[in-house]
Image 1 (cartoon, protein in one colour):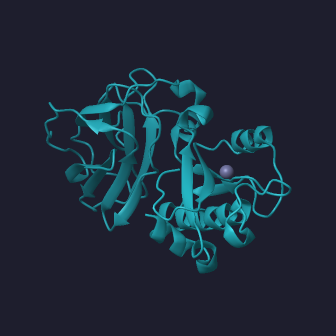
Image 2 (tube, rainbow, N blue to C red):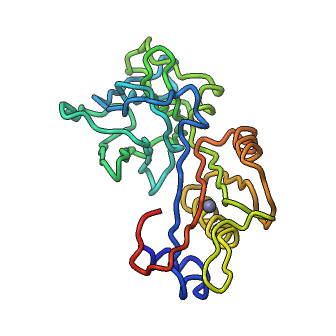
Length: 265
Ligand SMILES: [Zn+2]
């Protein structure tokens, strides 16, 4: 692990000493409504119904708790829509139900503590996908709204229950902004490695690179608490994150040890 991390940093930084990178994920800090000791949400079933205005379909993801965070629905391939439910499990009693509307097939795949949902759409009508949380039930709703042409939906039964949440609600739960916090900076150098390598420089380089990866891979908005060598108080780091309305706070630190076998953070 240490070696791979070192590749991300300047080689000269890692050669004489071993740097141990620590990443702290601050869900509870930034999501006060989620509560500190929240149970892991479990998906029990997924159901499909026509929107009551006939303009599309609603995929209802029945969860035991409200989801702390989920990804923006995105097309990973033509007609293949992906949504990731973060820190979510699949119920042992989960049984796949028959999809409806424009969804031809779907899979639910656990991956590293998250659930990856893939929906195969028939592709006959262009669709806009939006994720939201149902205020009444804590379920997650995936709205598949037809865009453009009038629709051949006359035969679809009108369904009363699944009105989509407001834009406000959607925005609040979308994992759209990630705050990356490079530790230390300015007069606070952090840990000092052999040859005078300073933690503040190492973690800044890591932070900027991690941010770039996240922007490219997830298409999310990345906010940095610092992008250069300056001192920022802990209080200000939190303030920056809250003002940006970040959904995830990643704080990056690195410790140094003279023992090459050292592990952990
Ligand atoms: Zn530190």
